[in-house]
Each structure stands twice: as C-alpha cells, then as structure tokens.
Image 1 (tube, helix red, strand yellow):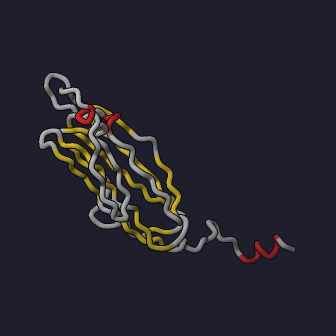
Image 2 (cartoon, helix red, strand yellow; image 1 turned 90 degrees about the vertical axis):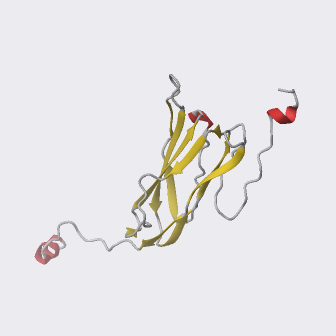
Length: 172
C-alpha cells in the first residue's frame, strides 16, 4: 500500500442508463471471485393466464463467491401503476469459508405483486455490477425483464345458487 487515497476509495465506473432499473455497486460494496444472478422459479415462458385480483411472485437470488452476504446490494422494487408490490424481508446468508472451502454469499429477495388493473405490464430487468477480483475488471450479471398481460377479473357467481321461489318468498 502506498498510502494514496485514490487506491483506497476508487470511483466505480458509470452504469449505463437504458431505461431499465440498474443497481449501482461500488468497488467497496461487492468485490468477489465470481457472481451469479438468478430467478430459480421462473419458467422459460412469460407468465400467462393472469387476471385482476391475482398475484404474481418474483424471486431473485444473488450469489457471490469470495464475498460476505451483507455486501450484496438490495434490489430495487420500482412502483408500477396497476400493480401493488409487497416485498418479503430478504434472506441473507454466508456459506463455506472453513478449511479452505470457498466462501459464498447469498441474498434471496422475493416480491409479490397484486394485479390491480387489466393491461400489459413489464417487471424491469435487473442488473448487478460487481468487481471481479481475479480478472481485475467490472462485470455485470443481468436478468431479463418479465412481460405479462392481465385479463379482467372473471365474473363472480354465487357459491350456492338459490332457487327462484326462495328468493321471491324472502322478499315478500
């Protein structure tokens, strides 16, 4: 260490703005040997058959080798008109690190979205920037946006239909 201040607190490069939600992470926040961003429960296809009043859940897992869980950034939950977002508390953990095993940090975030209006929606892409300590360069992990359509709520029917004569006699 030479004692120069710029070596201790380097400035992270700019994260491009392309309309998607980005997470800006500085060198001091996430420095890792490897990182991964995943949606474990997401099918290859976009969600289908959704109607007003139903809910959709998005679960995202961030893993970083050689880092601590507390270093992994929280993910943004942007406001989307027509949807109500209900984030769960994140689950943060560290695994390994004993007897020469690689330490792996993990953060799992889950958000339930209540579908309030019919229409076409898109949950934005998620991008996490991280510093690769082995290659000595900035890298990014990215999840694609999730597009889906919400249909009107189905017409409600009585659970137990009453015979017509019972309805007439109750109002007489």
